[in-house]
Length: 302
Image (cartoon, rainbow, N blue to C red):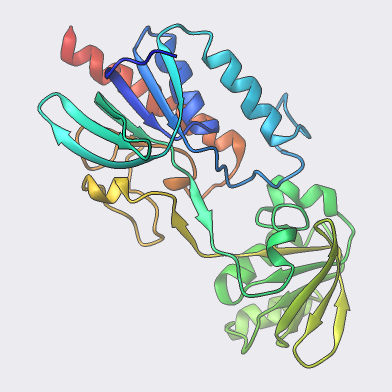
């Protein structure tokens, strides 16, 4: 595949948000290069939910179909590579890849997602996205009426418990140590028959990612079907930081309502810039960023 050295827009990240942005731009005849390292955060998840017309579909099949549709637009190109550095130039931005290639773009969209940091619990990473889950809207229905756990503490655990409580009558919070709840929160948890377990989980026993039971450091065990977990994360790339993008208190790239960062010409969309992590919300933010980049180019050229 012959690639140009210069594009109107470079999109770093070619999953749901990046492909959605590229479609909006391709339909406006913009020259676009998508650079993608093929590391979506949900690559282990068997089914995607809460996305109308695609409910229950495998995430990789959604991405594959999206890529096929996007690349039908002749002005959009896709490069399997990893963007590792970037800098401003007189026309916009220069992006360099791990393969040593350099490309210039007038505008830049980061659709780079995030990388979840796994806890030091044997078996957890194998269960992540399968029975160790992050979102009741994405996965909760499939575990309705099942014995369910929440591995979190304080306000976040309380928030998840309030959302999951109507999905099951068997719900417990595993704080991995001393509970950090207010008196009012403790009262509400008790009123809803939600137990708090302070024992430290050592191991997830599972079968191909389906949890069977927890083993605790004190030698006891507990059977469950699913566990919600609040994990820290890091960004897949330092490129946004290299180019001056700022981050909010949660660690997400700061954008306005139109996905524009605080650096002129740079936009961000998908999981790297929003707390609502789902395929549908990534697609929505990608469409917005693509449309607004096209609008910005139009205003500059008209």
